[in-house]
Length: 473
Image 1 (cartoon, rainbow, N blue to C red):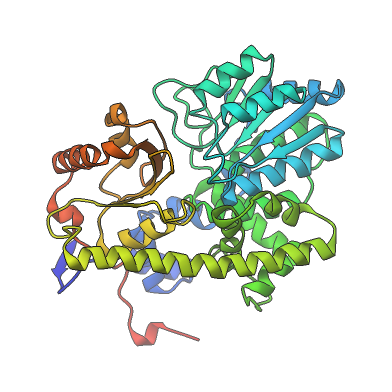
Image 2 (image 1 turned 90 degrees about the vertical axis):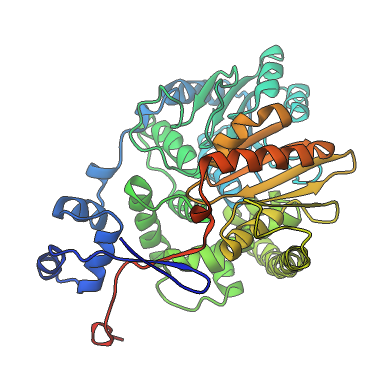
């Protein structure tokens, strides 16, 4: 790959592929499009076919291959048949809200005695808490199903067992070296899970479990399930490859043929007037509105908005979503500008530091992850931002670069942390605020052993070169 050093960016130019011209003619695709496929690793007819033409038979494995899925389905059916109370414990982002909505949508029609709980980001924190399990026990719940969380819920799992509650964890975040002592854990990232595709969002894991449940009952899933799967998958920015690609394509076909009341409201708020929407429209204009609920307000309204049938309530929540999303944008800009000021004044040494770390007790915890993403895009370095709580805990969101696995780094620095979880490129963590300087020092030292200064240079990767004559309307 050829590179050119620009004033700000290193430009990676594409290699010339001699086979691309023949494939371009064979697929009736423009030459730059085939060059782009080659640059992204699709360099044979077989790999291009697999990418362009997804199918149920080729891309979708049977849900029973997911470790513990059958065990979880059997327990859910037992709970339904014996009128046991089931609690869905979700998360406050779009993935968690759509996962919770999906569980409610699919379990309620089966006669399940089911309710859901989404934590408030400030008051409750992330994931299944000990308090939630204890309250579930007091209210005679016999089954708790986590969606988009739970793989690090060690203490809550112990309490659930003591209280006689069967905990079913469905999650897509990477497990630590051990997993909670739960009744069943459905997560394709478990080392002994044979499911071939690993890159689901949380809503994808929930969808697979519910698919197995409905298959066992010889029933079709509610069609609205495909809309919820679409929204959560795109919003969580998981790779649109393999099975994800198949289901997103199915979801787009569904929502472009059948417009639900909630989707209509999201399109109206987002000023999306196109007849046929794309994954880009969903990711940039529709789902950020749902995200704003969990970032600034009570995310439970999001579930009611997505699966409710009351038109007036959907319209009312829709107006709230629009206002909250506008407020979120303003807060996000204020935080970003304040960190840029720290960089320009030298408080943050952008030239020598390997990562950007900053904290404040004034930043809403729900927005700092978005700001961290903007900082990575602007400066090309991992960014970790912390909300300082009243009791002196630094709760952080971090975003990384492709060259540095943040999850592995946090695993090595676990002795300084109270908790952490996530993926290689995005993670959450908490620690005592007094340990922040030591954490920064050790993270910087770790980064210097793993990546080079070149890795921290901002880059533009060019997939293909096109001429003006290659373009049409």
